[in-house]
Amino acid sequence: MKWILRVHNVLGEEKAADPRALLGGTPEQAAKDLPRLKELGIDHVFYDINHPAHVPIDTQLVLLRRLVRLIKE
Image (cartoon, rainbow, N blue to C red; front, top):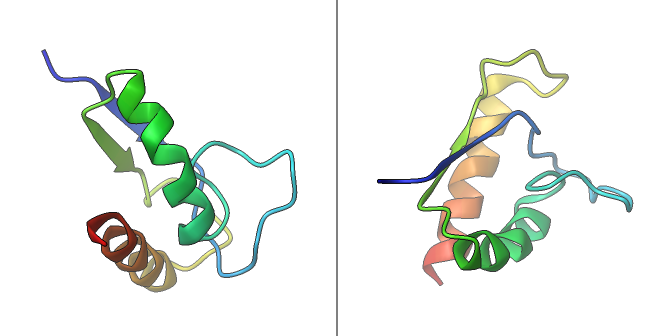
């Protein structure tokens, strides 16, 4: 069985203040959450960018691509 975490928190260009929502804030902040999720057995993370947000979808896609690049480093 695969474990998938659906995320409604959007990524942003500005650093989120603490306490920060899991996988929220900048891509760099979200990347710091991923090792713990892996420890918990989460196999996939699904950002629901269709969920109402104050960040335009085009911007969210750019930020998600940045997060993916950080993961691959």
